Image (cartoon, rainbow, N blue to C red; front, top):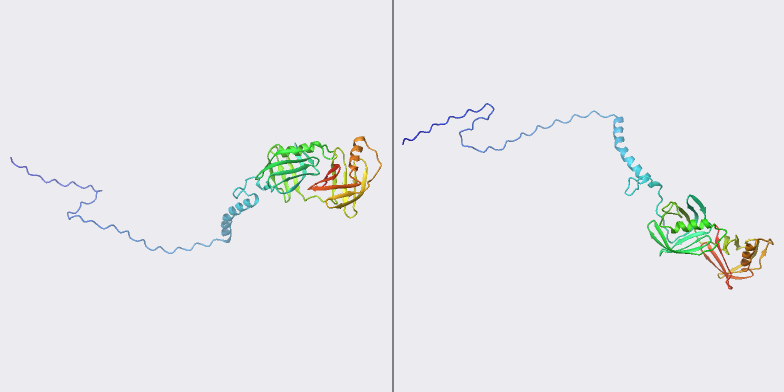
Length: 313
């Protein structure tokens, strides 16, 4: 069988857009193309100088946001962590509640404000509470958690005092015991206790009252109004009993007071006032132990006769 001769295949024409035919020379690997280095840039043409006004405007545009941020932070703390946002500037800081003798300035409940002469409150660091409504004494336990204060286990005496209206006592005791209160310090030596309903008790830090020069308002016997003042220089005590005015000598030594014969006016009053006055006069012409507990003065004779009074601030 005759072998067929292979006919050479004619090369295909390359379109004009195609690359040129490969060379018949053995293929070689060409080195990577080298990108020519850019020609050195011409030195920049100096910009036209800006006017002083333009420079000042640019600086002002940068500084104004910074100044506004700083100003906001100093004004209300909103720019600082925990700043509190609107209203933080007017919020009073938490107060130190314990270890201070607080005198009650006034009580606001249901929109009505009442003064509370002789009322005070002390919370010890261990949680023990002592205080007075100005008429009745009370004790309790306190739990202090930051600015939150809660009183519990309250014991309150039950006396009637003409100098302290029952409504004032109820408002004060209610504000302190109806639930936790928030303590804030509106100023040095000041304390405000605020209930969840918005009632407030405003207090001021006070030192222990002095026996001399203090006007002592008698709260027990109750139901009457009587005040006494001790004069160190004159060695006397003077004041007003439930009905009559009174004065006597007063010698103070070693925690005891020796009172002389009382000199009184000679007015007659209703029976209850005269009975209370007679009881108070038993303190005179004899010796009595005295004790001051912050704003409360107690005089006690050996026969058990006693008078309790609070300092009028």
